[in-house]
Length: 489
Ligand code: GLU
Image 1: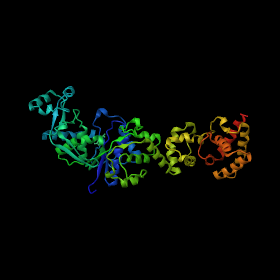
Image 2: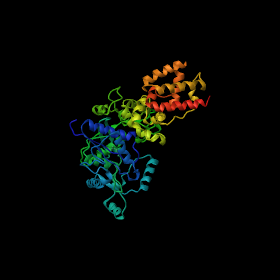
Image 3: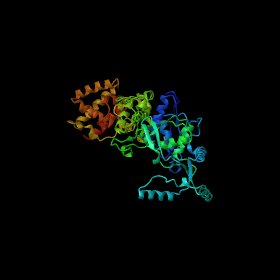
Image 4: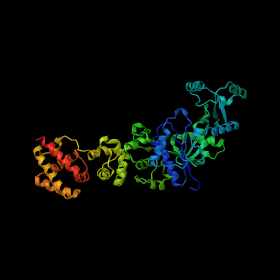
């Protein structure tokens, strides 16, 4: 790519960002990084009524979490600052005025009531749609009178009423629209703010954006943008519209599909690198089989040719599977560090703080089975409890009773007190022999020991668990088990 790549992500802070928004950011970022270009974040806050406090912070936090960094934008100064549209109002006003002077835009004084009337009439007669251009035909005198009355006005763009507007979309190919079907849309609102159309065209031009990569829902706005570019004598960027994301039932992605605010995935215990890998597959593929790829590989392989035209399917099960794959790939230290905040959040406060060194030993024991970091507290709580809480009857295994369980636990306790090593291999060997001497099957003996040391019937491998718990904890738990089983005899 010979030209300098400059792309942008232009969030409107009107709600918490979801997968679809951030997928757009991701594809732009990948494209910039792939081509050594720049990635700009621009805040499109022109719809003042729909602003949601905290939404911009959530967008930036989502990007931070995924390590999607930007070269210009909020928090990162650049040559085209400010990167927030509400701080650039004079620029849009000037351009709107230029378009009016040029005769390709005009003030419109129609009130909301009049526009509602017009729409109703259009529905009743089934004729026409969009603005009927009444104010285009005002005489100079009428316009002066309205101004003198102080009538509020917007500026509308005068769309050509014939011909076509066409684009060679980098993803969708050739698309064209008949101009007569597009109405004279508003470019400047009565509050002095630009509409999205004027804001986006102005800033994409002034910020020297080379490629506009955005969701397909913006494709119908593209002819309006192209007309504005032409009227303003601006060279348009290249456009590429990313496929829609759908749920497995092929309906547009919604909360119903388990797709919530992006940061909820963090709370649920997804790893950012797993989510990033999953998201890139929502509309892009390296080939027909590769799914798990490092971010570096994705950056070096990303291309618009690999972006699909057909809708992308969001499959939460696949995301969860992929998260498990990434979790298994972590070192014990890394996994422990990722788990620490979740245990801090989810374990009963009395068990905190968690000792990191201890957790580094525990982590490999759950690594094979854990799919979400938030699974960890439930799976590891017994490691941190002073004494696990359980029903004493659980100690009694099939074919045994309390009377035969007590000496078995007692024998284990005695041997483990003396055991020269507490490594799992040694523990296994010792305890197998003890079980045989007692005439117990491994299921019986080890089943009882498992409950005694963990309070559970299913855990990671018993001897590894005992090794990690360490001699002191295991002995305390065994003697406690001897006491409680004694009460059942
Ligand atoms: N502000 C628009 C949005 O919220 C940006 C659309 C575009 O990328 O042109 O998605």
